[in-house]
Length: 166
Image (cartoon, rainbow, N blue to C red; front, side, top):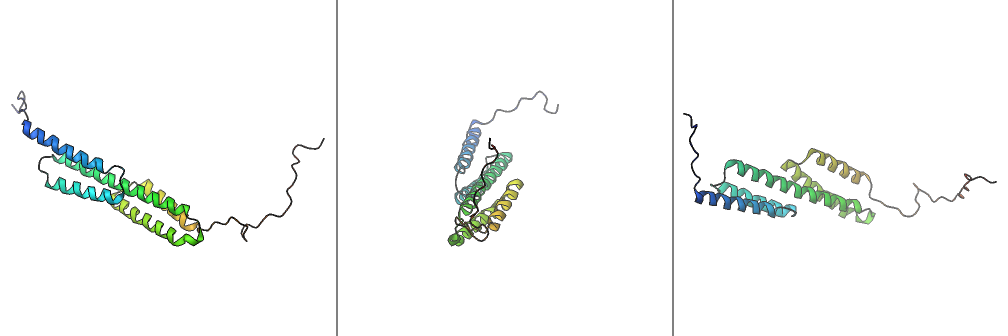
């Protein structure tokens, strides 16, 4: 009664083989997304999306897992690219290179927008905004020589009297 005592039917070996083959294809596509740039990650993500739409063998829970992981990997690629652009913008402190610095910040913001659309981590978003704000407020000018804000100290150095004279 109610299926108690009934044995599960043997899975069809051909169907199981086809299922394993489709899983391996999906796994290989996901492996292609590791450590690639955001453009390549977007291309592979689109390939995975079309693969999952046309596939009739994989169960729905596996399709969802592959789709979620694809989205996570694409988000990570965009986060890496945004971090790289911000670091490059941070390193540009010469006043003559302000246009290049602005371009790096614009690129970083473009990747940031993609991360936001993919559902990135909230802590990373806050950290990105904080670093971007710091870069924008830093003025981007590095002076190695004395300036009006920090003039050359011409006063004689005070002798070290901590040891005392005995």
